[in-house]
Length: 154
Image (cartoon, rainbow, N blue to C red; front, side, top):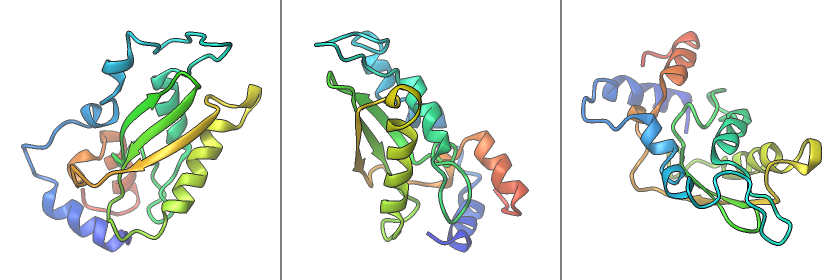
């Protein structure tokens, strides 16, 4: 997951007109859970975190090589929160060979489980997925602006 590889891939695929918008990738499970506990719904004294709050907190998780958050890079494919307030994140990486899964998982755990009142969720699980494969088409407009400011041609 080197920045050179990402920049090359971003340059060669940036014009892909068939790419799905980022909002579809990030909020895959949001629509499915909106009526079933998106807001705080206590179950045995446990309040569930809201999907939008989790997605916002995940913007504090930064790809260590690129310095851009995982949400704007399009690496978060979906979020689900169970009745025990445990978040399962469907995530991918720019490369299946990326050695930084532990770093990203630690950052995600820190962003979601710590803070005032103990954090947004009780715990997290990351489901690393490879389909659909990540591509530069998944980068948000904000992510593209950040990459351009770093000198990438996206």
